[in-house]
Image (cartoon, rainbow, N blue to C red; front, side):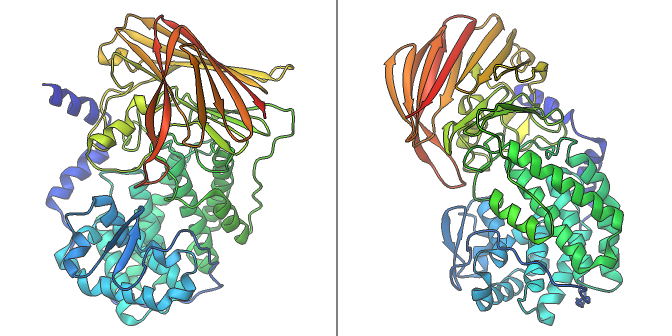
Length: 551
């Protein structure tokens, strides 16, 4: 019965189109066809930007997600001993747009030919799943536009992949998967020419505008509410503007202008949702090393003619950013950044990258992260994946040892928290701001409690007040510390926290404070030892008083 309830509370949010296409996929399979690939004429030069670290080390060795491996035989492309995500990365070909790519063109051509020879469409495998095809089509096309020589064998393979993808769009999933399918069809439809290319481009044009308007919210945030995937989608849009400059006859002016306006909004959101080190915050599935870093994205935008300036705040000023549509709130000064999750867990019909992190927050001082959500180091179906998605891995409160939203499997959510009573004030003359919200995630799971949290932030301190309305057996708060942070335990209500530049006093009222060992996961495949502050609530109202000063 419990598993049945999980499925019911998960599936009831799906769109009819998702259910329809899930059924359709069982009966309709893409056909493998030979398609001749012919390169289209270009109108201007592709703007080259290098986005990531090297992936192909030599003719056998590779490195993805901080995990080295090798491809010695055709079987290794689908090696069951490797994690699924690692195998997907093997087929993406991100290396073609990595740092110092030009110096490794011969090696990259070797890997393209190796992939073609050892991954025939008729055999399927990880390389012929629509998401991996989509990323590979884009990476090959960008590399060819950047100067990597493409022979007939490569062009024919590219065309075959695009034809296969066009029959297998991920409408059963939607979200970022369907969007990258459309992006790939744009690239194949522009870089190649002929009737098939026209057909692929028409499919892309048919879905693009509506998906763009839905997936990028009015405040500039990607609707999946994960800063990492936001940065990935921003890269996608920059690529499409780049493509429109090379093939202007294939894009309408209105579509290009809509994309450019969206890019500007997304840069604003990215700045607000980044901490003092100018890197993304860790809400939902987020980590470093997957999306390009902020400074690289700005450099890319500048190459394309955008004027993108990093957010700057005058000294002795406190600004509050209320991201109405995506739900987050950020209070910032010139040396402090606090980002709070007053948001839903994500789009109701595709919360696959959601964590049970309602009312969590992150805080940085200067360039140092202080309080951090614990990050994401893996996907899949493991207990560790569930733990990283769970409430205790975030800076919020666990009631009765349950998660605030019912995350399960690798990418599923059943009963989920809803945000209510969301209030965001304005900055006062005395330079402080207050904002608050509550969620009913525990109540929806049978615990008759509402968690209400209020932040009051100034230039030199932050006070967080929790109120648990209802009856509960246990309530435990958490504050995860960045691995570089030092902590000095004073007593059960007080500790001192240190960075190289700041001293922070943390006083707790209404709970007992403990320090335990923990881990932080800044990248896939990375586990770093850290400390975690545990707060065992002994009453229904608890206050955190956080004060900081320069050393």
